Amino acid sequence: LSSSSGPRVCIVGGGPAGFYTAQQLLKVGDAAVDVYERLPVPFGLVRFGVAPDHPEVKNVINTFTQTAQHERCSFHGNVNVGKDVTIDELRQAYHAVVLSYGAEGNRSMGISGEDLPGVFSAKDFVGWYNGLPSNKELRPDLSCETAVILGQGNVALDVARILLAPVEMLKETDITQNALEALAGSKVRRVLIVGRRGPLQIACTIKELREMVNLPNTRADMLPADFEGIAEALKDLPRPRKRLTELMMKAAKEGGDDKAEKCWGFRFFRSPVEVIAGADGKRATGIRLALNKLEGSGESARAEVTGQLEDVDCGLIISSIGYKSIPIDPAVPFDPRRAIVPNEMGRVQDTAGLYCSGWVKRGPTGVIATTMNDSFDTARVLIQDMEAGKLDLSVNKPGAQAITALLQTRGVRTVLFSHWEKINAEEEKRGKFLGKPREKLLDVDEMLKILGR
Ligand code: FAD
Image (cartoon, rainbow, N blue to C red; front, side, top):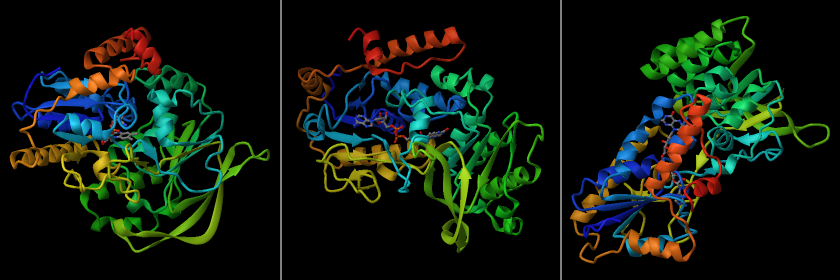
């Protein structure tokens, strides 16, 4: 534990927002920063969201590790803030508290049948193949030929790619072994990626689209009608969207390898209306879509229903319409409509000394770099407030010492960063045996057991 008598700040959440905020705060010469994380393992969605075949994206872990190992920083995993310790208790022990706990909830489609077996949220499906302990029992049935993904953002494309990628490609990644085995036996041959609006409004980026286009043994299968008028609109588009649209049109036109055994395609201008159950009513066998037309144009175009419906047979439905933040403590203001902690530039509304960064601050969009900038902004605002005398630094705060003692009385077994390094070494050892960078431990109790706790 740090013995600094300078400002003590605690951060709730050990994902990118938490670590980037800590990194910036540590630039204040005598500040001590403690990160509290619900899971025994750090890094949030870098570990549990980013696709296993994007190892280069996970290099940020090296920077986060440096931060965690900083002499004035400490990591306390396996602490569920809001349950094991309250925000008020943290506020008493620290000069400032930063909420960086991400977006662990899921936006529902609000249609009948969405709870049927065979329907999953992308969040759970991604959690399953990435080894999130709460999703280890998911066991999606992959015995159907067609899967439908609702939503057309990067997460939707990650899921489509994992469903269609050759298993030889995946087996060298850190995808969990049970997901790999399920995918090896998968019968899914066709993945349709459905969006409410048109090709000009699609939310994915070109890197993810290019990966779909380049997937071995897979061709694109699109509907020419969805692209009517798009060629004419190209010249007025901003460059990134123009390049994305050109690539999409090329894929739609050329399709790819005729001998490919698998295919994928966007289905535009369609909204889910109902999950169709099989004759026994026990599982999803299809999805009913409403056909839309666009009102307006460009980014702000709205989808309006035409009254026409279309049924698609499929045994697997994955809704990828967004994550959302949830309140973790009634003492913290929460905006249920926007599903964020209401704030001004990272200062939580009406609560001096409380700040937020990352997805819980601005909503669940944006890549790690966006989260980094946003977290640096929050840290800067916090430092400004310190310098302006808005946080009472004249009072000594006990920081982690008091919270650790409190957690001990409550039987919470905290996991320090040195403990995580043991888990990490064990995962790398198991991975080496399988020819993978790591084999993730899927069970919190097993992680604690390895630590002898
Ligand atoms: P998170 O990463 O979710 O971190 C929040 C942390 O808080 C978690 O560790 C969580 O366990 C913890 N927590 C939650 N509740 C509590 C609590 N009560 N007490 C203590 N701790 C708590 N970006 C890219 O740049 N490239 C990509 O390839 C990419 N792929 C992605 C794929 C998916 C499926 C998703 C969902 C996102 C992807 N992103 C990608 C975006 C990137 O992951 C986010 O920008 C970033 O992770 C947001 O950081 P965060 O810290 O706000 O949230």
